Image 1 (tube, rainbow, N blue to C red):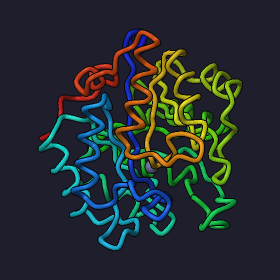
Image 2 (spheres, helix red, strand yellow):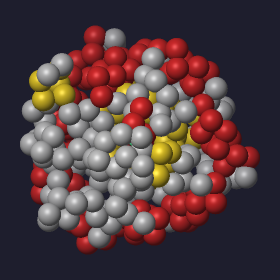
Image 3 (tube, protein in one colour):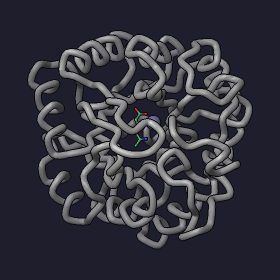
Length: 287
Ligand code: KMH
Ligand code: ZN
């Protein structure tokens, strides 16, 4: 069975908050539940189908607090039927147990980071991002046991081997949803070049759907390339705080609107959440 996204559609994810970006870098990063939900709704209205969630405590620190994730989910689900994808990457201050806690809040999807990386620059220089094979197994088991679909984030060719292992061991179900993250040098990702993206797409396992996340200035060029290649795209302030060189983005919705304009020029419409659920093999929206 071929799981390709229809050629006239693109599934857009917005990653709004992240673990590293914050209001001191761009005051428009949404941090608190009401801001996150309003921003998600604005992005939904521009064409985003999936929202990738990181939560912050009232002081703006990364948190695994279940009630905060539940609050965010509830506020989003009150407004629209977006697909909710929680981050189990969490943030550098969280333990492995804390990172996975969010899935108890019943998202539709959860990120699953497919390898370990060393943060080589920035405020968390020298802090490892540990995703050892046995930890990946532990994460994926908890995610899939709850009927949540893993979003497998791969930052290098090597991590595709780990995806193949999970498939071989029957730990993930078709269609395999693989997010290719490029250009995040400070966290070990391969370069955001057309050649790297092409090569990684060429090496995807059968029955995969791919998404592309270009970090920093690569966000728009790589999203454009991924759309041409039939992929899904992720944009937002988690990965890129600028609208253009030297110009901070005014909102996540502004970044979604930009990629939607490009999509339309390429003959594609943004997929609705209901369409995206169908393409990704997700059940209907959760209450
Ligand atoms: N900031 C992204 C490049 C996660 O949340 O699980 C990595 C990320 C990880 O999205
Ligand atoms: Zn994230």
